[in-house]
Structures are given as structure tokens and as C-alpha cells.
Image (cartoon, rainbow, N blue to C red; front, side, top):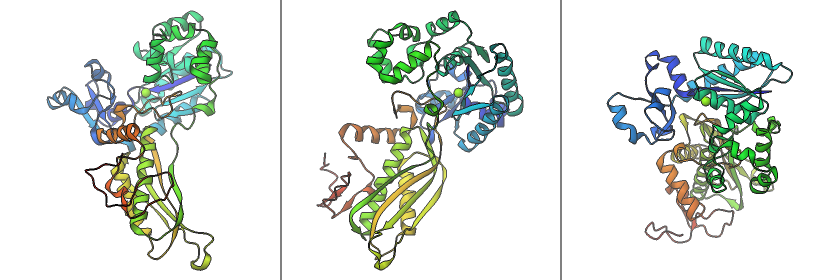
Length: 419
Ligand SMILES: [Mg+2]
């Protein structure tokens, strides 16, 4: 059996550990830049506030004091996350930290009759020691344990154990296909078109139909729903990378500051886009420059530096500004550089929920500010990097074909965009 331990309304619950006045009241936590709702208390859910709802839409409720809206305190969330995961480890020999507020619990070898008691012990420890409410579902596979947890949350029960086939079908019958682990919006639409509305509808299809339409990952989900555990630990680990980097070797050695500056801005923008794609925020930005190893007369130079941001962010402007500030510190005049790159470190989750299994880097509207959304959307529809920061543009370098198109032979004229 596998367990899934999931903190309830995690960001809101963290805020409540610091301020007991928030208990029992409608509370939401807003995303990076206060753009939209990323966590809701049960009271806020009952008012009809949606996950991802833009903050301006609930302005009347927050102004009148009916709803309390808080900016995210990601340092606090991360600290509490570490403590919660420590409690899980105390009771279960092997756990996988799946996201900031979820962990899978490997219950191999433990009699089914003892699971409820272990779950209650974890629930009580999290509640009394940290003040965080958790829900834990036990089932024969990871996918099923997530369904049990969902069902328990709906029924306000802290612990659930799936023991019989009847329980399995009744839970699958009661949950829409969009709540199946790994099914995002696009896949939901495709499955509706195929007449699949509930998770039970999906489980009743032939395995071969699922395989032909959804590939190996779809088949694995189907098998998991039938009680075969086949999504392995390594597949669910590391949804958030520890760091992101972008670097390139230039076709010629470069000592032009403006050119390097534009390159660094482009790499920073690409890193920020990747970061938003995996629903992360970062706090450290780094830049490196390298000279040509084969031109030894001036000696090999590898200046690099990093900078810690004031807050966690995924905003291209902030990340690019930091990268350019580092470039100014490490750049050396009259040195020819052959390679440059940007990296992001200290990455944490922006939203306390599960990334998609099938739809890698599915970008949902609520994840980032409206500006970044618009930039990503336009670049996605029109072409790579059509819309850029001013700092990504340089003049006078034509023909460096390294996968980017930021070089302009003529002075850049913003009224005639180059599509
Ligand atoms: Mg949660």
C-alpha cells in the first residue's frame, strides 16, 4: 500500500500558524506580484473564490473585509514544509517529498489494519507540533492514494484507507476525470470528447484503447487505477529542478559589451520562462563568462558571480535586471569571451499543487503575473522571443546563428516589428 499525505490549504494554513486571528475566517494567499489567488481557506472556497482567480476580481470582498488577502511568504512556507516532511519521515520508513505540501508514503510490509492508526498519528503530530492540518489517503497505488485523499478532503475526514474493490469504484465514480493525477486541461477536453467524464469512465475503457490514445503514461495511470502500482518513485521525484541554466558558445570570440549584455538578457528571459513553466520561483541568479580555452596567450578566464534577490520571483524583468547587474560586476574590458550563461538557484514551488504527468510544463493562467502570461503567450503563438525586454536587443551584429534572433542589422524600430 501507498499513502499520500497532503497538507490542507497549505499556504493559508502556514499563515494561520503565525496569526490565529485568521482561523475560521475566509483567507486567500496571492501569487508572486499579488496577481491571483494561489491558496484558499475552506471559508474562502465556500464564498466561491476560485483557484487562480485574478486578485482584482475579489477586490470588493477584500476591501470590505469579508476576505483577507495575503501576499505570499515563501520563506515561511518552505520552513514549515521541511518540518511537515520531517514528521512524515518519523512515522514512515520511506517517503518521497513530492511537492512543497505533499509526500508519498511507502507502506510496504505494513498490515492494512494498522494504516488508519499510523495516519492518525501523523495527523495528530502535524496538528499539535506544527499547527498544519493534513489529509492522508492509503491505497494500492499512488494514483489511487491521491483519489482517496481528494475524497477525504471533500468529506472533511483526515484519513482514508481504500481496502475493497467496491470502495475503489465508488471513489472513481464520484470524481471527475479532471481530478485524475496528471490530467490537465487539454487532456480533460480530449477525454470529454471521447465520452469520458468520470475517472470510472476512464478505468472502464480497454487498456489497449488507453494505450493507443494516451501512450505509455496513460496506460500506467489506467493500471494504477486497477490497483497495479507502476508509477515508480523516480518518476515522481524532482518535479522542481534544483537549478535552471541557459548558456551558449558563441561562433566567434566576443569583446563587445552591448552584444554580451543582450545575450545575458536573452538567457535570463529563457531561464525565467522555464521557471514559470515548472511553476517555480527562484531567489538566486548567477552569470558566467568563459574565454576560449584554445587561445592561451591571455590565459583562461572564467569570471562568474551570483546575486540573492529580495524575494522569490519568476518575473523576467527582475531576473534579467539581476543578471545584467552581475554582468557589470564580472565583465572585463578587452577580454574576448567565447561562452556565456545564466543560472537560477534556490527554486521553490509557486503553487502548492501537483504538476502534470502527461502535459509537461503545462502553463496555467494563474501561475504568473498577467504581463509574463502575455509575454509567454505572444512568444508561443508568434514565434520564439518575438517580444523581448529592451535589454535583449542589440545593434550591429548580424548572422550569429545560435538559435536566437535578437540581432538587428538596422537600428531597431519598434513601429515595424519583425515577425
Ligand atoms: Mg495540499
